[in-house]
Length: 354
Image (cartoon, rainbow, N blue to C red; front, side, top):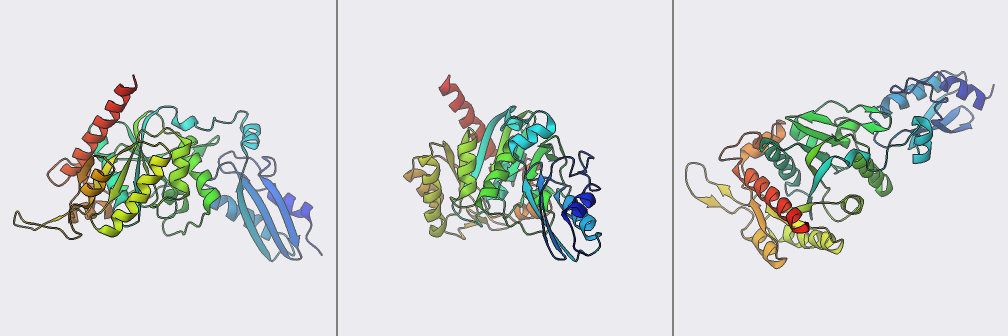
């Protein structure tokens, strides 16, 4: 006996959205059903692109449809509701940038290439600002390499309500990342349009609350994510991270060009892995060369905000989920210097606008 559409719909009526506790059918989340003999394909529209409960919904749909006699294979395709569909479901759709209403300053941390320690700088800057008494959040916008949850030691998954996600919090720092949505070790294969949509939702449909600073850790390069952030919200400034060697500096020029072209203010350059202090002596070793960050800063008439040394304790802090800047001491001093310069530059820019 052939499987019918009516049988599939009847089975899906028993599957509830875990957050709203109503049937997916009643909520209008079942968008399409395709039947080819014993194979069934169901398309489900989630309330938001980064729905933290998507894996459970997908599994529940598979189990419900597979319980129908004659069904052998079930595939589930997840898509996202339109703004109009969400508005109909919840009564009133949150405005596009609802979550950003109480965020005072957005600082983006960028790099021209990967492997320069951009996320390390971003998470320690957030920690240093928090230790200075500011309310801080960090958005991990690196969709394909989300490292911030590891660096903050966060393993929990966020929850959502009525079209809004709630950020996770550790050490007084609010955080949102695809790494916490997908789960540890799960590959994230998102193409450009979905990356753009997810970033916009992370900015506007995350309930950030009142923040003095939201640090946005951008993916490396000059692709979709930096452009989406640049065009979606007013950025107080961008910090560009590099290492001293020539190959990194060549990529930095392209990154600087991206933001200048879009009239996004660049606060300055951070030279990471700048030097290595030889244990037991005052001697330093320039592992990756020297002066690269200064050359780029000078070429574009930008300040060199900080020179971060190669330090095993910085690496250890990131691996163990406790950033070194949670303690103010000699080893974390460069990050506090960076935080102080960021505060100074942001406040100066504000006063100049008055």
